[in-house]
Image (cartoon, rainbow, N blue to C red; front, side):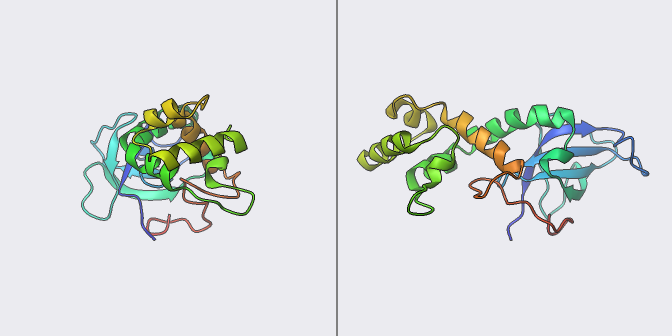
Amino acid sequence: MEMEEYGRVIDFLPDGRPIDRMREPIAQLLGEKYFTVLEVSIKRGSNVSLGQRLYIGKNERTEVEKIKMRLEAFDITATARNELPIVAKNIIMDREADFVSFFNKAGPISMRLHQIELLPGIGKKHLAEILNARAEKPFESLKDIQQRVALLPDPVGLIVTRVNDELAGNSKHYLFVRPPSRHVGEQGY
């Protein structure tokens, strides 16, 4: 299973959590590839800020000491909850080509359900418009999608909302987030 290489800070606790026995600087991160929410130990003397991109891969890490655990949506701090949609939007914009590709390549899940319909606010009418528009010419950008599909809500907002729903664990199908795991640990978060 592929792991996150980079995460963005959604909260930084320089003194750790008040309930922890061993107080150490920790940060809560949102992974850039699978939107995995992780808690990491920060190396002493490192100062990190909200939204900062941190390397969390297997090689030498500059700011991150170790990955402590994967978090579920209800485990994150209030600050992390507030920052998550902002950071998710930034990740989506930085990886725009991947999400445009989703709109260009998404297919049916079953006879009655299409992957695009899993986005909030997308019903059969919007789905038909999206499929017709991409059949004429593949989408080139998220802005292109919005301009060519009449009355479509902001595609970035739709994806952010879907990511939040998937992180909450309320989804039967996962498009963008690695499904919740029972196994927690540095290698298998």
